[in-house]
Amino acid sequence: MKDKLRQLLEACMENGSEADLSALKFLLEGVHEKIDQNKNTFIGPLLHMERKIDEDSCEITVPLHPVLHNDLQIIHGGITATLLDTAMGSIAHFHLPEGFGAVTNQLNIHYIAPGIGDAIRCRAEIIHKGTKTIVVAGEAYRSDGRKIAYATATFFIIEI
Amino acid sequence: MKDKLRQLLEACMENGSEADLSALKFLLEGVHEKIDQNKNTFIGPLLHMERKIDEDSCEITVPLHPVLHNDLQIIHGGITATLLDTAMGSIAHFHLPEGFGAVTNQLNIHYIAPGIGDAIRCRAEIIHKGTKTIVVAGEAYRSDGRKIAYATATFFIIEI
Amino acid sequence: MKDKLRQLLEACMENGSEADLSALKFLLEGVHEKIDQNKNTFIGPLLHMERKIDEDSCEITVPLHPVLHNDLQIIHGGITATLLDTAMGSIAHFHLPEGFGAVTNQLNIHYIAPGIGDAIRCRAEIIHKGTKTIVVAGEAYRSDGRKIAYATATFFIIEI
Amino acid sequence: MKDKLRQLLEACMENGSEADLSALKFLLEGVHEKIDQNKNTFIGPLLHMERKIDEDSCEITVPLHPVLHNDLQIIHGGITATLLDTAMGSIAHFHLPEGFGAVTNQLNIHYIAPGIGDAIRCRAEIIHKGTKTIVVAGEAYRSDGRKIAYATATFFIIEI
Image (tube, rainbow over all chains, first blue to last red; front, side):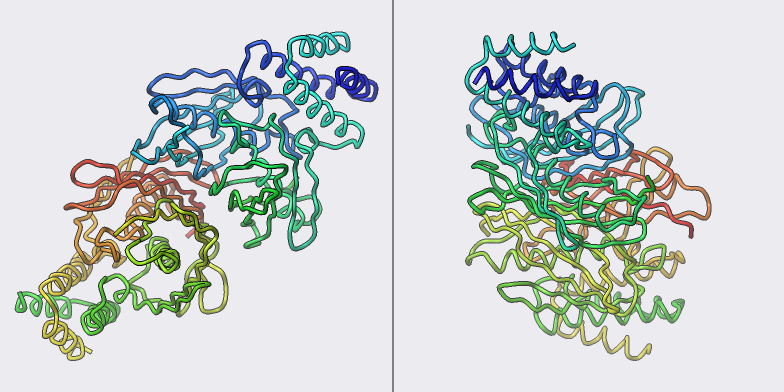
């Protein structure tokens, strides 16, 4: 397996452009962080998420990189959705007792401006905490301060 | 740069579990396909998307891999969102003349069942094509045939 | 009370325009139908809803009248929402056993074209029936056949 | 026409229950207010809407009445949608120059608690004002202070 991985990397480097090498670096650093910090998902470290959370809100910041682009060379709407869903799910989970988790039941996103620049920052806060569901709102901003998306989601509370 | 990448890979392999090595393989194969087939985004090949498209619908199929999991060890809602947004955006774009693109303005997803199993298949079709916007619906299924999500989106038509 | 109602009607008729009298007729006929047919809500007969329902779908048709207009003299988006929610809730309820009801948890509507003309027809069908929720889609058409809205909703199943 | 209206009212009163007479009063008072205050829609006065608006927000309050109930004897989800859409559309319109209007393009509502009690109060504020669209959020509360719904909407700016 390890030799296979080395061969894959060499094959990528042989024909890859500078942008491709930069993407490799972005991804390998993500996996390295996942291993090094013993994280329990790949998506967080692969996107280089930094998370701040307290009772009031969860903030997730990620650097932007062409590896996250869509055909139009702006951040893929699905990546923004991933960041918002993660921030909103994190704050929902934060408000649950031990042994319970929050799964997304419905996600609604208004895309407002193109996601460009150095970084995206998402901020989520609770709209309503019930016994079966939690409703959360989230906003995404780019580094020049412009709002790029506004989201709401319903999470189901489940035993885990 | 290349030596830096080799060192990163070695560092990952030194301490990584089997699951981590499998993730590295999944990602490196994605980048390799991007380079080899000269694709214009990373997200498609990184997720190993296979796409079928004609006038009626766009279908995107991806294999599932733990690299796409959330904390609960099922496919991250943001990944499902990425697949649905890509399939819906592709069918919207397919119906536009040369020189025009479709950007997501609003995305709404109902999550129905956990994304588990071997693969996810998304299917998108046009609900309404106007002069300024296109409304699209998309469904996601897992390999046992169970529907896991239903989505709708409004795309803005822009000149590119 | 009855004299009060007679006085109110006379006051309306004294200063009302032809459009106002037509609105009064529309509303009084609605209340009359509610009483005459012993219906259990006012909203259905007030909007003059006609409903066809079977296992596959629920169709609700209403005549358009200026009493339903917004400031721009087209059908108020909230009325379209009421029709879609009613049609979607009806088909959800149709699929439940005796003693259970369906309450709207999330409603999402894409408005596509202005609601004008003689009548609006809504058609709803089940997207997914689970043990706790039902996901439904609905479409609204005007009498010239043009689609004016596309909706989805999540209903919670409750004991009643 | 006037005799026809009088006959309709008598027919309603002859067989109507106390609840039906109360509904007639609610509706006739609405039409009377529409005529008396020369309002340009019926929906506002029929629902007995009271509106406060300034740059920051629009608040709409309505009394609850069984005429607004659904089959489960709580406020119909479509009525809540009508109030939220009206409050959100009003604040959007408030921020537009003379000669422009705001039409709902997409409406998303999370229903949180049953709409019961004496009155419903909706409050809407701007999330984003662009050149082509305005994104607005709205909340609905009942008189005991409990939040019953959270909504977002995209409005298109049109020339009127």
